[in-house]
Length: 134
Image (cartoon, rainbow, N blue to C red):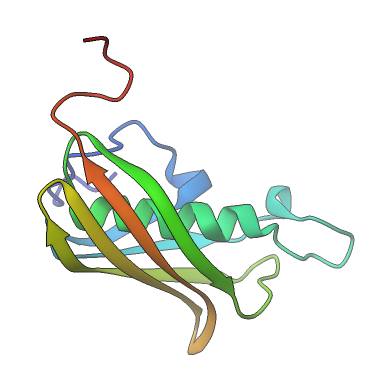
């Protein structure tokens, strides 16, 4: 990950799988890019599996919140257009509401000017890591 960004969450995640952060403003916004590669193909025509697009959007939402223990609670998403091998997807995530530990984040993914995905993510910033025992 870029040393110039103040990333406080998901610090071990693979940029190859979920994207490279370009901009992070904690509690406000994040921009992340991911290039669709051949290993993401779902078929012989080069269609990228939607799970990679969702993973990019989810990662962008987590970075927009940027809390060390942020987790995804739910998401309402819409796949609008296909992504193919070689496409560069750019996710822009914006925190739209914060209510205590809960943050709502809107994410839009584009390939160039073409919108391919939108979603609203409900994220929770926990006091301790979700896998830590009481």
